[in-house]
Length: 495
Ligand SMILES: *Cc1c(COP(=O)(O)O)cnc(C)c1O
Image (cartoon, rainbow, N blue to C red; front, side, top):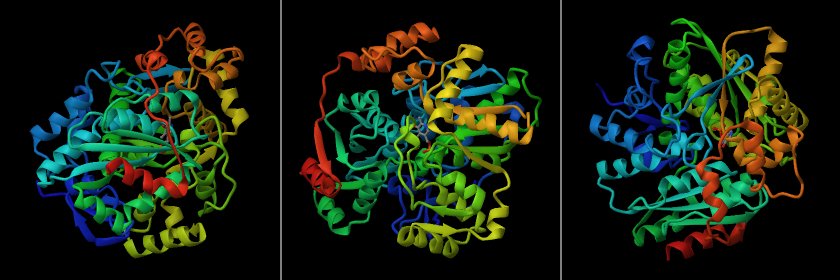
């Protein structure tokens, strides 16, 4: 098989192997790495349906990571998708009402980021070995909640790596915060910043492109890499579970081979839904890609008008992992619908960084026909949690509820009854307050953590280990800084 190369969305002349792209994260020109051509799935769905999650992951990922040997890739997969998950199916499908919820929260931190971040450290250390890299890999991450803990848990204790996580100190839930500040591992650092997620992300991006910082660290034997969803090592593992959900529907007799399904994805940085789009391009029969936003509805406006405009009020919602005004991974879709024109994409991204807005051409917009965008307000999100609970006894988290609510709007608008998979991105146990309020069983005298016992009674689902652990774990991280102080924090940690 010939090597699949990765090129920058802003400059096609930059070409890397998969392992190099994984190590670099972001391309030096600020672009994102994309495969030069998206591979087609080379096995039939009926063959794939007989496989375990791990074997299916191998069949999907080997098409992207062509410079990994079979042993290397299988080694990464088995290290990631094993005892860290509390379901042998890794990502089980749960039917409630007329929708299928693809539960992506059975990993160590009970949110969907585990799906990718449990394997990324292994892909990275394997990539480092392959490329003769001897520097220690420093992961810098900005998080709006779930990435942070999932990255920390993935990298903690992995030799040859360190990880520094920045989170908006008032922009994550109490449980998310507690999960992060109790993180163990001498190679971990967790920092709250006085700002929102986009500011944290911008600060991290600036450090990635700061040559003097990088050369100082290089002298001490450190090299930066990113665990954010822009890394292709995050994106590729996410394609797997769309194939998996289709295979589960097929082997469960819910669809016939070749039937199309729709997917609905609660979207923030656009990584998860982009993985679904890539699965579709590989040949998986997905009809509509339903992109769900919360009140930060930049993407809804983009899909309806063709204008991406981040100049707007930033709203804190009950689905904080979707409180995002710049959906970084959208750039990969823009590049694709621009006909893989790097110069055109670069122009649009320059416009985004200078003016905060860009407009796509009518012919680009035509290529978005398979996408449908909509959003759910805070009230609609809570109402959806209540509706699903009352209809079926199933309790969904606020992110999943945004998707579920948007799916209901889609059905009402279009009459399309195609079987639909809703990406369920977090356990309701991470957002007990919102969930209990929504189903009318909140108890204001209890803390978010104490509410887990009430949620257990309401849902009949046992409390995940991730929650039990933080109940007694000591706080290990108390560092706070301003947006401008982020670089100093990094220098101090690595000094
Ligand atoms: C990160 C996250 C999302 C958004 O996913 P993107 O890939 O950034 O679009 C949605 N829900 C939860 C719970 C998340 O953690």
